[in-house]
Image (tube, rainbow, N blue to C red; front, top):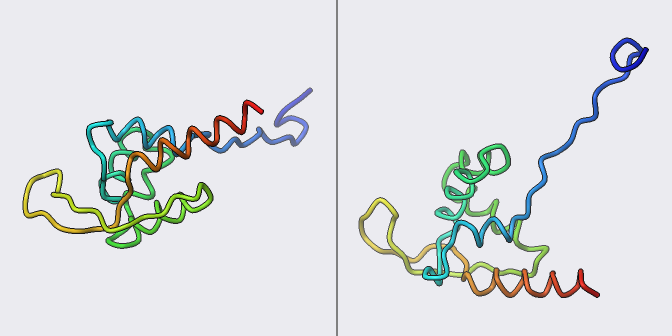
Amino acid sequence: MSGHALGETPEQHAPTYDLLADILAVVPPSEAKVWNEAIVDRLAELRPDVYGPWARLEGGAKTAQLTTALKPYGIKTMQVWGTPESGGKGANRIGITRDDIASAVTQRDRGKAS
């Protein structure tokens, strides 16, 4: 006997993901600066099971979620000029530069190779 018959419970595995690689996947090189809220929405489309809860947050909480997740990588957010993806008037909002993400990936990968 094994499994439930012995009172064992199946192992629970948290979904694995690479936040930085996922950001690079949803922010093309042609987009130098991007609002956090746009990135979170795109990440939620890429991996709904991981980032969906972030996208459901309201207002500044959505932006703060990504800001907090990027801190361990040394990536700082800043005011970024942009326009809503659905169209409309441009504005400054909290966002990142794609180059900062790419640099963090390069640094991290160098560390793995050592």
